Image (cartoon, rainbow, N blue to C red; front, side):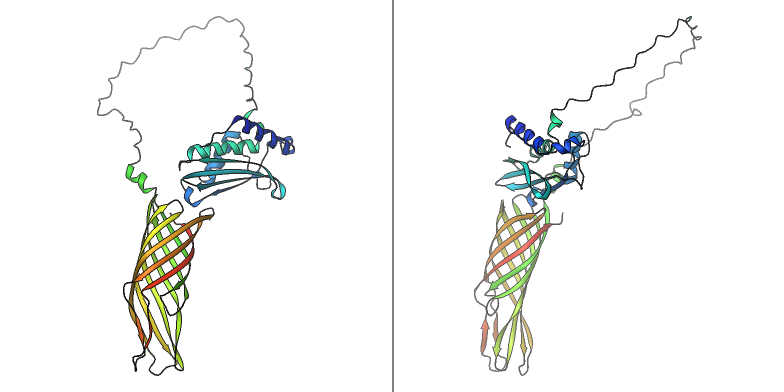
Length: 351
């Protein structure tokens, strides 16, 4: 993590003091506070813990939603580590000062301690130089007037010594047990949900759109997901009428993650449905459909715990579907061997 240099700290103190002198003249300075934590910085403290730590350092509660100044703190992933940014804003959002810190590791402890110190300096620059309040002077003890020493009370016989408790009756104080390693490992996993839209070609006659939903379990390197997909119907003109073709499919998606990039395998199965309209003896028929392939996924944190996912799929049909006219058996459409899809989804953690 980048150390806090003495020169940079003094510069932050002097600039914040000049810009907020009126606040100090009124008494203990107060600010509004906003705190954003990226989706991949879930191991960092929550907003309440940061507020309590800053208040403990300052010796009072500096938070006031009606204050003219605002402190905005952000923690987000950067490369293989984390980056923290603190900004001091005036009325109308004018930037009065700021501080940026980074850590090459995913450990938040040292990074958050430095961020809390930067927030304290931004709120009250003189807090680190202000001497502690002097201890109250003890009141003088008046010596009592001379009196004759009181007579000692009569001696009372001491009770006989009691035998110590046996070992089996002596109280036992157990030391707190450390958290099992298995439970610590489980805390590294996240359960996430996402929903979005997809544009596809090769699964129906012509290009089509659809919707996707997904529930995933994600670790530090690997993740696994169950996904449902439904494509909107596409029509094939047939004489005076037409035939609608649509796809509904469920998939299993294991992935390997490297920061914001994931590479995945996709294995899906579902039903291809064809429905005739305005035709003699129109019918609705369904046929099984299966496909497998690869996926490339990019993830961007956009707000607090919300992320944007962009996915690109390339699938090979494991079963081919043919749509034929019922009387003449003329081929109307056959599913291609390859299909592709591009989807955009919003993702948020459930746990």
